[in-house]
Length: 361
Image (spheres, rainbow, N blue to C red):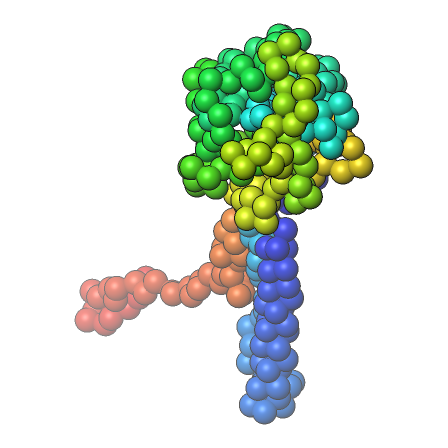
C-alpha cells in the first residue's frame, strides 16, 4: 500500500478538529440546561434524552471527514509487476582529424591513441548502436549501425592527411552527428549520446548554439579534450605514415599546437549546454577510457532491464464509505419519532322520545 499524494493525510487532523467542536458543543448544551433550571425539573419537561443520538451522529461525521481526506491522498496497492525492457543506447562518435592530431604528447600520437580507445569503447558497450563523424574543415559521416567493428574500421582507415579540407569545424561536425540521429527512425525512442573528441576550437561556426539545439532534441554531448595549453610541435607525416621532422610555417619555425583559454572555455560550454561532461587528457591518456566506463555503468544501471511494480487506485473505497456515513448521519434524527394518538370519543346525536323528552341512545 502506498499513497500517491501523501500530504493529504495531514488533513485527517481536521477530523480531530470536528470531534473537538462537537464535544465543545455538547458541553455548552449541558451548561445551558443547567442555567435554564434545576436538572430534575428540566428533565421532566424533556420527552427524551438525545445525547446518545447526538454522539452517534458526531462519530459518523468525524469518521466521514477522516475518510474523505484519506481518499484525497489517493491510496494505491500493488497489483502485480511488469518487466521494463532495456533502453537502447545510440552513440555518435565525432573524432577530430585535423593535422594537429598528429601531435605526440599522447603515445604514439593523439589520433592513433584516439582511434585505439574508440575501438575499445565500441567493444565495451555491447548492445549499443554507433555512428561516426570524422571531421576537419568538413565532416564525413557513417550512419548508425549495430556493427561496432564497422565504426572502428571506419576510423582506422582514415588519416588526417585524407581530409579534403583542413581546419577544426566543430559546429559542422555536431550538425552532421545530429543529422545521423534524426534520420534514423528508431533513434527517437533511444537514449542518444554524442561523444566529441577534439584538440582544438572552432573559429568559424557557433558550436555552443548547435549544442543547445541538439540538447533540445534530448541528446547529450560529452567532450573529450585532447591536448592542453602547453605548446606541442606538429609532426610532418607523409602519405605512407612516415614522420619526416615537424611541420613548419612560412617563417620557417616549427608549427605548434595548443588549446587556448578561449578554446577550452568553448569545449566546456558545449558540454554544459547539452548536459554532458568534459574529460581532459592527462598523463599520456586521451581520457576516452574514462568516458567508456561512464557509459558502460549507465547501460548497466539506468538503461538496464527493470521490474516495475504496478499500482491500482483504491481511493473510491474510503470515498464511498465516507459518503455512506454522511447519508446514515443525515437520517439519524435528534430524537425518536412520536405518534400523536389522541382518542376522541365519538358523540352520538340526541334522540327524541315520544313524550317530548330528549334522550340518548
